[in-house]
Image (cartoon, rainbow, N blue to C red; front, top):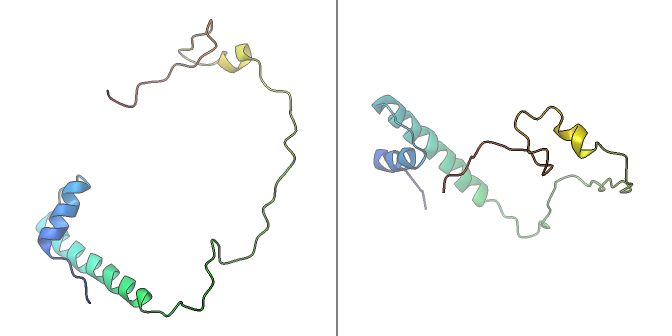
Amino acid sequence: MASTLDPTDVDRIATLARLTLTPEERERFVRQLNDVLGYVEQVQQVDTADIAATSHPLFAETAWREDVPQPSLSTTEALANAPDANREAGLFRVPKVIEG
């Protein structure tokens, strides 16, 4: 079953992505996204029934190191160059990034 997108679909995707597209961009994206969907359909047709599931194509051992405590900066040293720290509480102040 061939999946295809039309300009209306691309407009909806652009709106979700908060993009404004010119008519030329819209047509180009229709072609490009349909090409991507075509490649995905080709990949889905590959018989993978006898292929074991893997999280990585290459065998790799996890390289763990011992968790050994090391000397660190004191709170005073860590906050020394912070532009707007609450030194009494030992905290960094950062700009608000989430509204609410």
